[in-house]
Length: 563
Image 1: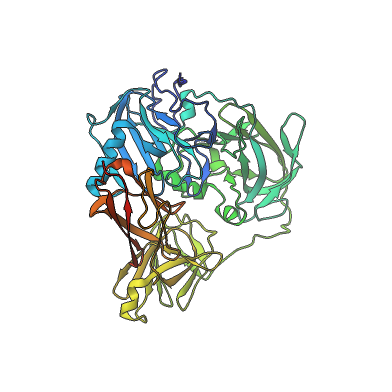
Image 2: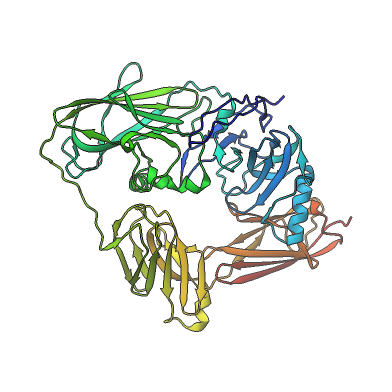
């Protein structure tokens, strides 16, 4: 029997009325013991994790069941992101999401295949009517997999409210063994005001932690003055796993009065990219370690911040003593505490603030255009969280667009003049991000006459690159003239190491066949159970196109017993 979730009332974290949740509504989506590799609200690249990653014993094909009655309201199949995903709308207004599936089951699979063949496309997004694919609690709806942007076999499971905001599924009573308190990896101080300092240093500094017998941390006495804030690097672990999961709640108190609290109960997708304002983005890009800032800066509307007296900042006055406490919790209630004694002292600054100023001032509250060599850079309103001096320089076909240590909230537009290239060569040009080994990585590029245009979300070095090499096609489990009667699939590897694969289309004996693309293995797979083939002798034709229009046509003949 699958375990039932116990549901209860939960506190709203974003100012809405407390919803009533019926008891025992959702059931476990898998028929195995639940262990997690990812928790709700974990800090990920450019977003908060919107669900639970449920481990599937390092294998694919584990049956996935509907968590409650409802109907399939959305099906999304994509090469990246959620891969094969299924959405079920329930009568109480909640939606459950099941992502990275290997395949769908029963009527759902048949419906999806019909849509894919009708559109002659692997990637589809459809919204069935309520009467098309109704489901009952416990119905088999699919099998767990590793499709899309998944880093390994697991089921990504979400519960969303009526406004499609992801909610913490742990609020619905999932019981996991967890007696491990959160782990603190670092405490950092941030002097903010012009005259502020921490230990006479005006720059961010790491504070040494001392662990005492009861598991609490303390620090040596800090001498500080003015407006300061703190940040913390912390993770959580669950019993039975070594994954570095996210913490659930952080609360700070100054002299026993709560000043700042973050709680991961619910958020909206519209706000999730503000994670780059919440963490110390520069620190993350340099050290690959995320510091959660325990204060709210301008342009940070995150609803997960549920209390922020004085925006979480401390105003330290000369000669006064303070006790600052940081309490970090996981969902099971395990707690790790840091106590920071602070003595206010307005002394001479020994290490003044370092200002990393570039030559170009970009404002956050109005649009800006810059011309650098053959490049035009356009910053829309709100592209940056705050005004910043950026270092932007161009030389030849390359532009150094600052360092990726300042976060971009909105995309900026990069336009390149390619008039110096021959007309016949322009179609093979694209804008590429120069990677650490020097090779350009394709950025989606629009071509119009003498211009290339790309929208980008990260600073870095970009260049005008050219791709004149067509994709490579290699058969995996067959060769010319081979009998494939004992094979269940037909597999082909497609590769393009320059601009990357843009599109592909396959036919057998002139009939379209559905080939599923797994970009992580660069493999196209056709399932013979689709029953497109009716003849013993079969001619496969596969056309693969890269992002600059180079194409490869692969043709071969194989044999298979006809039906």
